[in-house]
Structure formats: structure tokens, C-alpha cells
Image 1 (tube, rainbow over the protein chains, first blue to last red):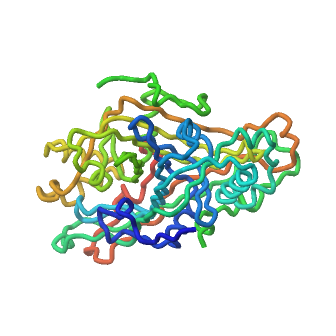
Image 2 (image 1 turned 120 degrees about the horizontal axis):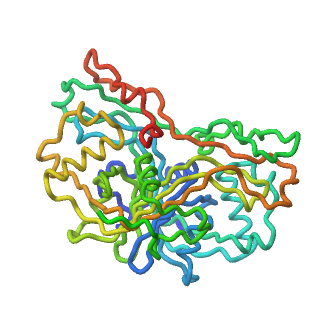
Image 3 (image 1 turned 45 degrees about the horizontal axis):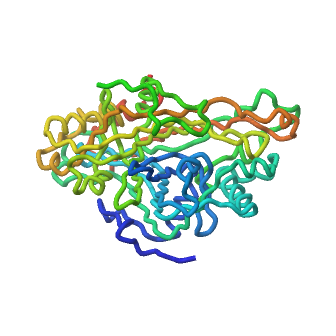
Length: 222
Length: 222
């Protein structure tokens, strides 16, 4: 596994470079807290961006299915993609319109995506994605059949060329604006689970599992 | 304003076509509830996907700043981009691993992005983006100076070629799996505000505005 903590020219944060983070562990923490990525790929010069689920195993991202079906058509040798994960933490309300911002953490990974063809690796990759979204679920659910495995596309992307961008904390206003008479501060935003909704065809005696009632993304990244 | 409710070959939903939505009002509702988009663009054959804020005014998306700075360099005539907005509504837990899914609403808009150069349009576009994120804030905050306006990049994208994809409701299992002994259902997820954090340098008497204490994305789209 190559360790490329220095940014390439392509991943260097150009705007607001003080927000750039190139540390692998910091990027992993963000990748591990999110579970929806936006995958970018190019067809006939046109970029496409598709949301999909993913998981990480060491230095590899595994990306699930439907986004891959269009992009990997005729591209078994791999195609250049960009995977971006964004966690939004709050609205930052400054005194001036210009200094308004958001608190967020995001990771951009560039590289060549290839399809996972090997049966064992695909099964393991699906397990990684499932554990990433909802730890504990994989072992409870009915396991994939050979036909289902074949019908599922999984792609892999090595996490070699990447950068993260993080903004935290209060608004930063121009010094002369601190006397402007307006409220300023941060409105935190969080992604939280509601009460689980049992399926109408549930068998008698099936309780909501603890991994559902205690679901939290923050705990995942600790 | 052209009305293209029929999908082009490029925006037709290929995977799970029953989830495809091509109605303009349905797409607008999703675009109006979100406020972070992922913008895809191509440089030297490599796709990039950058999160940024946006707003909509009738059939035009206005996209804010920092993402644009890299993509619009040397491209004043416009470049092909893809803007994707994804709202995640819940985890869908089926009996089988294979039928696990997510409830979500997403919109993909393809087109040519151009920079907003005209001063009045740029000011209005920034107002649109601000009102989109936090209605009421623009009028309270210190307005942009000419220098700040010049330092801000805004791009526009006509909403002509687009599609939306929506999944709602309970898990759909294979008929024979309904006897598999596992809990199944939906874990709803929601993006909710916490308590506002006042800036440490707040002037005396500045109260948290009502548009902050009553912030809700859902209300925005009604």
C-alpha cells in the first residue's frame, strides 16, 4: 500500500489552502463517518456525478453498484474517477454576507477505478460496505446467493491520491465588522436517526436490533 | 426558459428505471430542500467532484465560488459540468443483504456552466444562494462591497437536461425471504439543526434570530 500523504498537484487545495488536510488518518476518519459518496466519471467529455454507498478496507475504497454500471461499461481496464465524501457540520453566520461559510469536512480521492471480479473479494467488499453503513447487519441478514453476487457490481479505488478539507469554529469577520449590529455564530447541523419503522410483514417476535436503535455515525469514527 | 421534462439519453435513469423522475416540479422540490451540491467537472481527462453551496432562481442554478475557481480557469466560454444534489432519508433494511437499500431523493443536472460576470446578476445570484440556505439572513448581514463582489465567483447552470431519482417506502424482499427470521424495516435519517452557538465577540443585546431558531429544511420546500 503506497502512502502518499503529500498532495499531488491535482489534489492540492487551491482555495483557502489553510483548510487543506493531507494526513491519511484524518482523511480515513472522515471517510469512515460518511457513508454516501459522490462518484465522478467522464463519458464522451461529459462529467457525471452519482451518489452511492461505499466502504473502506485499509487503503481501498469499495463502491457499490448502480453508479458503477454506467461508468464501467466498456471499461474493464479501469477509468479515472473522483470520489468525494462531504460531512456538513453547520452553518457559519458572519456579520458580513461575504464571510458567511459552512463548517464541513470533506475528502476527495482521485484514481483509477476497477471492477471487483473475484468472487471472494466481491463478497468481502460487500461485507465491508454493509459493515460501514450499519455494523452488525450483515451477519443477521440472508446472505447473497451466487446469482445475486454476479448481479452486483462493486468497484475498488486505491486511496493514494487524496486530500481533505476541514472548516470548524466560529465565523471570522473583518475586524471593522465586529461592531456591526447583527447576531453572529454557528448553527450546528447533524444527521440523526429517527425511530425505526418496522416492516408491515414482520414475523412475530422480531425485535428492532440494538445496532438500529443505537445507530450513530459519530460512534463509527471513534 | 426551455422545458425539457423528457430525459435525454444522458440523463435517463439506467439502473432501477422505475425510480426515475423527470418532472420539473419534482426536481425543483428536491433542489430547493438541499443546499449542498456536488459539482463535477473535467480537467485533462480527470473528473473532479467538489461540494459547494447553490441556489435556484426559476430554471437556473447558481453555484457558489470556491469550486468554480479551479474549474473555470481558462474556460470563460463555459465548461460541461454535472451538478448533483442528494437528500438521504433513511436506511432500508431488507431480509436479504441483496435487497438492502436507502431511501433518498437525488437530482442530476447536466449542462454548460458559465461565470456570472455582470455585477447586478452576481449580486442577485448571491442573494438567491443566501436565501436558499438561510432565508432572512441576507437582509440582516453587512452587504457585499464592490471588492468582495469581484472576489466572489458565481457560476450559472440552466436546468434543462436533468433527472431525479427517488426511493421511498419499506424494503422489498424476494417473496421467499419474508419467512427469514430477521427484523426488517426502515431507519429514518434526518438532517436537523442543534442549538445555535453565539459568537464570543457578539455585541450586547444581539438575540438569535427567529430564522435561526426555527431553521428547517423541510419547510423550505413546501
